[in-house]
Image 1 (cartoon, rainbow, N blue to C red):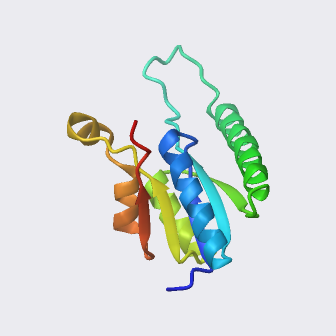
Image 2 (image 1 turned 90 degrees about the vertical axis):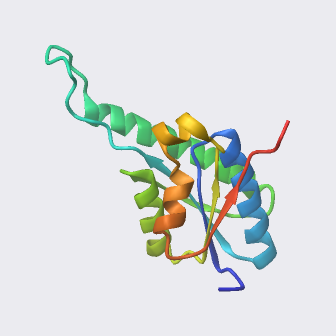
Length: 149
């Protein structure tokens, strides 16, 4: 397990994800490991409740992929200036499952993921991607909370 050779860090570009990216970059620098950034575009239901409503799902998903790729490129460029040369990928589907799958695919020894720290009804309603990754991943998962105000 140690030293880490590959660190996988999923991001949704939120504040908790920024904290996770910083931690993942620090681990990658410390262990001279490869850093792989990933963003998962969730699957979008193809059928609207109103049959008169038209929504072009493939075009919308392509736009989400393009936007995520541009954001990941910018993030990777920033990290290159900080001494880390990350690679990045955009996945599609259930975020928890896809992150665990990508960790296996890329041979990650650790996943560093941000958590929003939701509790109560928000957690019950929306669940937790980080919690799902912890349950599904074959490698250790380091969860990072956002800095406290």
